[in-house]
View 1 (cartoon, one colour):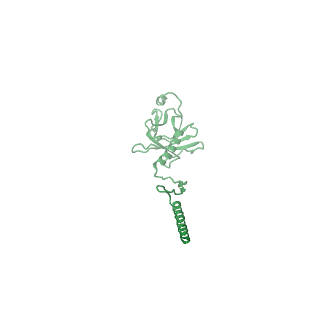
View 2 (view 1 turned 90 degrees about the vertical axis):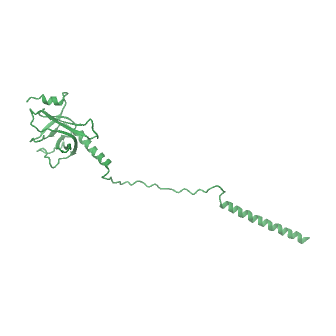
View 3 (view 1 turned 90 degrees about the horizontal axis):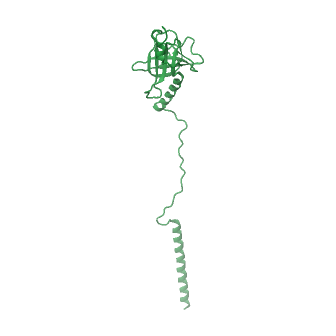
Length: 208
């Protein structure tokens, strides 16, 4: 009888120990594996965006940059020489303007008129003008040179197959422009035209 009781107690202790070990293993497994149907998120990784280089060289073949710089230079020189200018003889004029049908902001034109009864031949009509600061090698400046208050503005008509080159020497305060007409020795001085009369009518009204 006593042996049966001891044997029964040992059996119960054995079953109890097995039950504890089983619960411990299942707890470890449940702690290690996420529940079914869930995913464990990975910790976020900092992504560093590459900063654009600060030293960017401009490609000379980039037409937008070339046109932008070119147009800016043209507009600055145009602002200096634009308008109607009457010759000191009052029988010739220079009209520098932006064409009404201009395709670009710098499609400038120079129209030169003169009274042939007063002036000898030497004035032309120039269309689609481009400007460049400085004196080209093929053009002689005035004998007294370019003064401190003046700017030399070279113009090129680029009209059709012909390329007509000329030089304007303009006062920086736009008080006058010096110009040497074609086939003429010496320079003429032109002043801002302020009369309300049409400039063509004005030059033809001058006495011979």
